[in-house]
Image 1 (cartoon, rainbow, N blue to C red):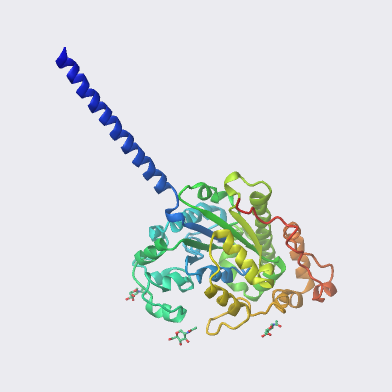
Image 2 (image 1 turned 120 degrees about the vertical axis):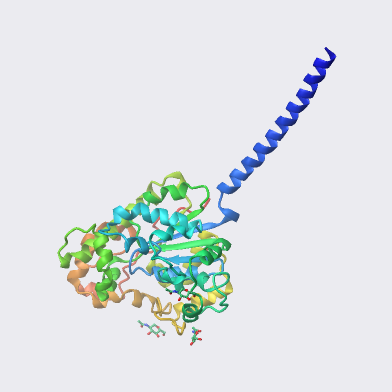
Length: 386
Ligand SMILES: *[C@@H]1O[C@H](CO)[C@@H](O)[C@H](O)[C@H]1NC(C)=O
Ligand SMILES: *[C@@H]1O[C@H](CO)[C@@H](O)[C@H](O)[C@H]1NC(C)=O
Ligand SMILES: *[C@@H]1O[C@H](CO)[C@@H](O)[C@H](O)[C@H]1NC(C)=O
């Protein structure tokens, strides 16, 4: 009997020990699980969602130049330009998955879209990413795209991955999204902290800018129009119509009827507000994604918006606050009224939603002191983080 009890006692101790171990193991497994499921060290992922000729290159630089940001411009270009008979709808999920991997700094996804033995320089507009031109991706310590081009190329993307991993913010700029629904899995992914900044611009100004470089848009336009046969004179309007429609659809999803996981994660900005008041608007954007306005960035923004940045290829807007509206209103003097009228027809709903006033005749169009921008205050463009 005594012996029997002793065994039971030992067994009990053993069981208690076993249970304790199990609790500890389970606990650490659980902690491990919750750690690996949340964004590493509070990393923030930002999608700059825009459309062609809407000032997104400039906005991209506003982020790329920040010392806490790893930035890539248009990674989805690789998808769109590598698939036969592409259409925007067909490529939507491929683009989404590419972005998910890139946000997580897994660059192996690029294998599918890059030629064999690729270099960092194979990435679209790679020198636009300050982070790819600085340690640890490159030994260069000054910000200079010409020098970056010469000195920062490397085989493979391992260094780019390494760089991506050390920054607190990964920012991707895309003009190739026409809806938000395909991004829902990213918004619900616990290992991502995704914020979406949606940049829009007056479609008449977009039209004016597209007209100036029609040829550049042939491939993209056919993808946007799903390869449908479209008479040449209608292509621009049809594309603009799609873009305008996407503004409405995205705004409806994000602002009017947002699913719970979208609240606090979407912010819309108008290019015109950005040009009229760059520092204020950029401050708000930084706040939205949790970036500090540094003195270096303040200086950079001042230089860029006052046309003082020398040596860069094309200034996004060489303007002062006094003539900012003149520059973003170039369409009013350049576009013939019949084109303006046509754009206003295909984009009517979006223009109303975004606060762009229509003009009724050429006289109104040319009279630059009539302000066609409705102040943004009455518009609900975003959900502020709680
Ligand atoms: C790739 O980068 C390496 C290292 O900088 C360089 O030697 C090589 O010429 C580059 N290859 C291409 C195709 O650019
Ligand atoms: C970048 O470096 C090149 C070559 O050294 C130099 O000629 C150029 O002025 C530099 N650009 C800027 C903006 O500093
Ligand atoms: C805006 O002002 C700047 C500085 O005064 C000037 O260089 C630029 O030409 C002006 N732009 C227009 C469109 O008037």
